[in-house]
Image (cartoon, rainbow, N blue to C red; front, side, top):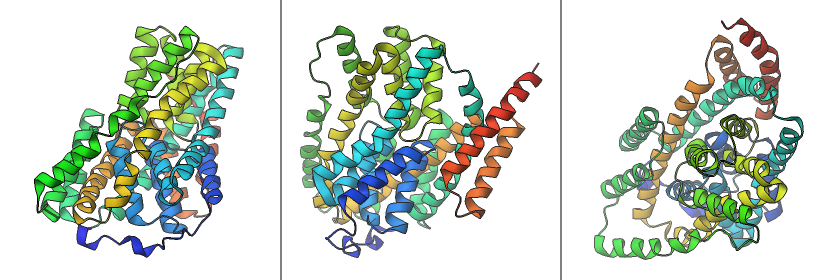
Length: 402
């Protein structure tokens, strides 16, 4: 879609079509039953809030997605925070962010308590075997819908999209520079600035505000909790990329540097992230619980999510104020194309790890068919069926292996 064709904000009236508590309830619902990681969650928000309910305009959604991709921290949580900010400012951003993260946080606390009490969770591999395959099907459908909506038939956006997809598949990582390059390229082609120097000055002034968002943890009394706070604040403030992009950073600190967990425990922590709904990064709560109990879990989660909250609400007024300018609209369109390409690439990357044999391939295809053909069947029901299938099939397949 060309910048000149971008729907104006006036499509949705200034007075919101929903109450703050309706949006908070939706965030609780998505945080409780939203499986599939960031790729699926951002697509669900578009489907539910833009397409079905009409609470959020297409332009506001694109602005939020672009901002979430450009800032460090968890993608889905930042997008949810921004969408809460759109009509209800700081109160909306805060309440929606908490509602989105809280359900999965409570889940990983419960799993952590069971893990400590019973010495590991051997059933987790079987559940992940089925859930992981079904999640790939869910994400694939979501990525396809998001692609057709965001990229359309624009050749330049398709080029940006395909470059981002290829980069993600080849290197199995994301790059903020790729998002910036996509945005700048589309901006220069579709809405070249009349006064580039002035535009650069505005962007630099905006960027100068960002370092204030890096202060994530308050002073804590206990040395271990202080270490947890500082380490996870770094993870939230300096790791770019969504979903599992934070895993290598966590592994380097949690296993290699501080020796809080061993390799087996860390792998289980990643599995917890994959089988629970909500943001994948919530596994920091599980890790924190294993290290220092409930205080450790709360410290790790707060230190991780506070930077992403600040990185969202500080630049949000700038995006709201200047979102109608053709140059920024074109930039956001370019970033969005790169972001959706990266999300689609993540489907391929995660698929390589989850689709490991014929049963998992069949589970993935079954999830795709159910989503496309059985419209009234919710994704959580599909995930639950896949978990049961995993518990049945995995022991058989494991016994069949040489």
